[in-house]
Amino acid sequence: QVQLVESGGDLVMPGGSLTLSCAASGLIFSRAAMGWYRQAPGKQRELVATEIISIGNTLYADSVKGRFTFSKDNAKNTAYLQMNSLKPEDTAVYYCNAKEFGITYWGQGTQVTVSS
Image (cartoon, rainbow, N blue to C red):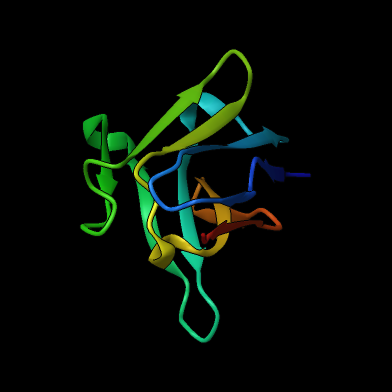
């Protein structure tokens, strides 16, 4: 059974930083394409960053390029999202996402609130 557990969400001031973690189990982590999505109140869930396994690259939403960095530690079965220069518009529930063998899995989400 695949499980994705996010952590690290918090209340942070504009300009601050946070690192989200996603601990994965039940899948071949090194072969799964991991990613992060977010959903703000009243809005659709949107892509933040995702691995493109076939080309060994990461795709970022334009709104977070240069501020957010995706990484993964295969030894720890954990994916990360380093978020810098946070803005109020980054406020959302952040979801971890994994794609393996054509199946997509989601975590339960972690709340990030950017406010003074």
